[in-house]
Length: 487
Image (tube, rainbow, N blue to C red; front, side):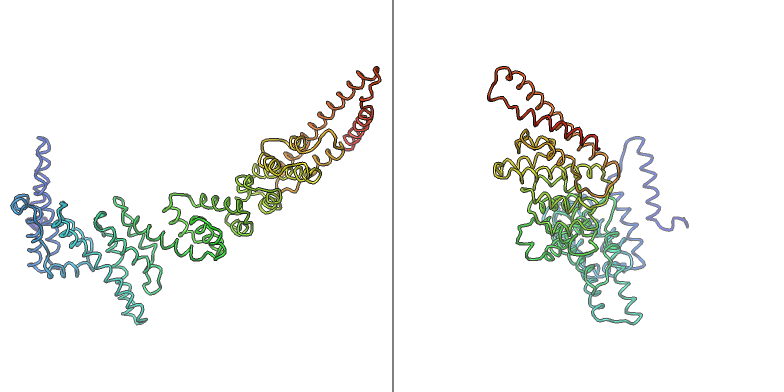
């Protein structure tokens, strides 16, 4: 008996034994019996701290709300079951020292019923913790604004902050009926964490909000944090950028990563969590929109430091959004040329080939500007990754009529590539050799056709037979042999 020390604990032990014995016969006790004994044990812990009259009142309210016989007799009317001011005052005072115990008592007093009297009864009980937190926040703000620096005042402030954390750790609420009220509390807590008048630590507060079984409180706080952070970030956007018609995600991304040297990763995390998108996805979407708008000054700021290794990836994804040769050259110059290798050898090889092909298009445009419709040129520009440089030369110029030495010099021209390794340079050299070989094969076919034509028409003394072409072909062949020997 000395080890049990109370009849309630003895009843609890007998309850466990009964449940174990009756489990073999698949017999179960009424749920009210177990919950009543558990509530008795909680009231026993209240006895040294709360007056006996209040404990008796709590017991009576529990019986009125949970005893099946009494509930049926009152036709589920809970309007008369409400705590007295003395009981509220006692529980309020106990929140400072033992919030877990108060929350457990409140949880046992709550009823599972959807009628209006039950909803009002539950709300009065659950509002106890919310009111305590708001009162503690007000007290903390007043104490901080008073700028008291003596030891007792500082200890009181730390005491208040610790009790805010402990009450938040046990706070529960009805999602359907208390969402607005708890949201307002989350807004006050967020403001308290951001303001210097309170001194609350947000990381510590979030740690107390985390629970294994219920994530509603931290989810609601995260929603508030995301909205407030978004408002602050959007307000930082300069007026000229706002006039560009940027989307909300683009505005937030630019504010996060272009307005300061050290981006706020916590703000980026909460925003990405709220939008269910990775922050890199927000970055790439914003970068591609800037490429599409040809806003390269803003793009340059966005690509500094943090996202510098992704420069060539932006080229790969966004170069088809460029609507002119100059725009594509600017994109390559900014994000590819003179850039060091960032574990992106494959992307560097692609950008090098694209740069080489762009130079071929520029040469075609200079030598045949008047006869190339702009629409056809843009189509060729957007299909550079599908064809070789020789394909562009064939469609944008009169390739058979071009001087062979000019075309070979163009195809062998070394493009301006980023700083990379020897493998990338070797791959680009192979690409140039392939283009030259293809062109030489084309010239060989051209010369063979000329020779066949001349041999067939020479006996007939045909005036249309191009003897001069055969002479020119012979000169071209000798020129090619000389260039091959010089390599």
